Amino acid sequence: DCGACVRVCPRFVYEPKSGLGSYIDFIAGRSKRFAGQDGAMVTELIVSAIEMGMIDWGLFAGRDEKWATEMFHVREPEQLAITTLGGTKYTFADVLPELKKAVMFTKRGVGVVGTPCIVSGVRKLQQEFPIFKEKVKLVVGLFCTENFHYSDISKFLQEKGVDFDKLIKTDITKGKFIATMSDGEKVKFKVKEVEDIVASGCNVCTDFTAVESDASVGSVGSEKGFSTVIVREENAKKIIDFIKEKGYADFGDAKPEELDYLINLKKGREENIKRD
Image 1 (cartoon, rainbow, N blue to C red):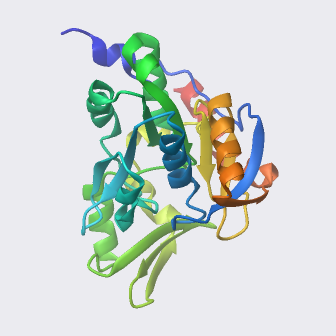
Image 2 (tube, rainbow, N blue to C red; image 1 turned 60 degrees about the horizontal axis):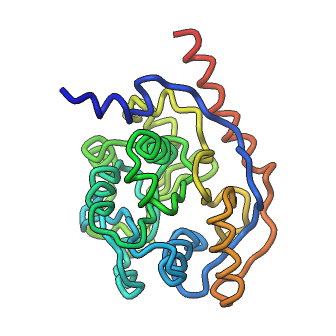
């Protein structure tokens, strides 16, 4: 009855956010230290922030052997040897409840990674509760078109012939969902086939690039093997400068125009919101 959930809910009073958002730099990056879905720049950003002393706590969404998400509290770079922390998981993770725990115990600050809706939730927490403003020092957003509840997507994939004991990677590219197994087999199907199980909140979300984050990361806009990094705030710029100084990553040019289609696809949902 305290009303805290309403105060921090990014959907209770929803102000659609969309577009590319403001940024300081728009680059492509590939970590030399870590392996990931693409350029592993999310991992590089969080670990570099820990090394700099900006934060002492990083929140990552990992997974179990059945690809159900579970949260990891990363304190040391050595913990990134857990390979399941990397890569994309197209299911929701309990980021914000775990963020509350991290904020209670951190001394220097917390870095958190999440989809656009998670980023909006973090910003609401920072607006309403000073401790989150003080303790959350880095917010990394992920490019996102839609997400799924684990029970729905796991059942669907199994019906498509995906063997979770062999599954090593999931990816959505060029309108197709691709599940890759350890033996090289790939299960492919059109993303339209999963429209019926997309989480209801995604049907009103217009934010593809996580415009409220300190830095946004995704694969669209960069060549294969690289991550697109949208550097939005000064804290993120300081981390990128640190990474360049240490030689921790290779950098190149990214192409903002390649994001236009997906940005406009999600922005189109704003008209549906207005009509409803």
